[in-house]
Amino acid sequence: MTSAKDILDIKTTEQIIPKVILPEDILQKVAPHFSVFVADIKSESRKEETVLARQITAYFFKRQLSLTLNDIGEILGNRNHTTILHSLEKITKELNRDAELRQVIEVLGCNFN
Image (cartoon, rainbow, N blue to C red; front, side):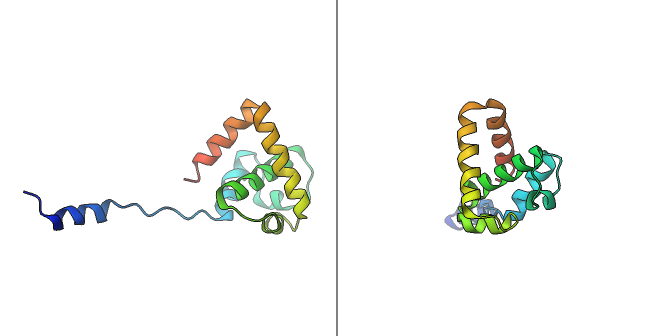
């Protein structure tokens, strides 16, 4: 027969501590997916793949970490909060139209949990 203490011990050992996601974790997952460096995402580069990686990073910073627009802007190369707002609006709008982007977001998002 199982005692109450045994049940409590089992519950304690089975508990999973949720992983804390940091901005650097997101940057480290997004950058290689788009074949860019983290430094590129934080840079002033306007190359299409870099811009998209930066916008998706901003999207994850907001969705996964609930960072403010100012905080996101600071992490992504001291960008203005309105630039970050534009990025978030653009990605959100594109998600409604672009199945491939939805899949990218889904795949990358699963890597953070």
